[in-house]
Picture 1 (cartoon, rainbow, N blue to C red):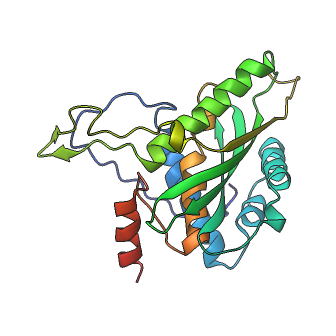
Picture 2 (cartoon, helix red, strand yellow):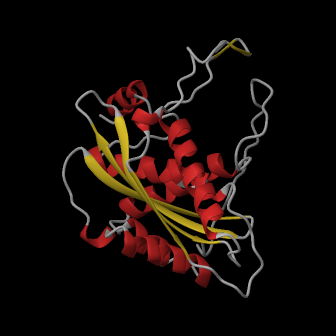
Length: 236
């Protein structure tokens, strides 16, 4: 994003436990923070979240995926009703340009359901379209699981989650109902990969959709029922 003059402070905080590799390494957690904050800036200034981003994007390839996902998702005509919301996030990951719009519904118990996701991808030269689509869809589904459910419990510097009974992973019942992926191949550029980019913007898109659905800003993952209740209480 082209923001003009800004002061940026970086604080490196040691982790309480040893960490390992994550799909997209640090990209997904960092993009969750960046794109959630961009959404806060947009709403804080009374601007549409996608229009706000486009005002600060100069890279034409990134602009193209953002504008494509806005059109494919029907963003400008999206329904506005309590408990349902749309959210958007985008990223450049190792040369791959990606933008996603998520539609969520929140049931009466506070559980968030990801109903549909629209995704636009520019990964340079597209060699195997079906394989690329499988990678993007798989990344989106996996990211939805860690966004809504997956959490390691830690106490006194040790992981206390000992089995899958204590670590919920999304099941078929939790799967996103519909995923739409549009590739915008740029044959003049080298292939930049599709194995990880699909997972990168999803958490931010979902959290931003939750804000539109109920007005609650969730800044920590996973977005569980308990986290929703705590966020609602702190937002009062």
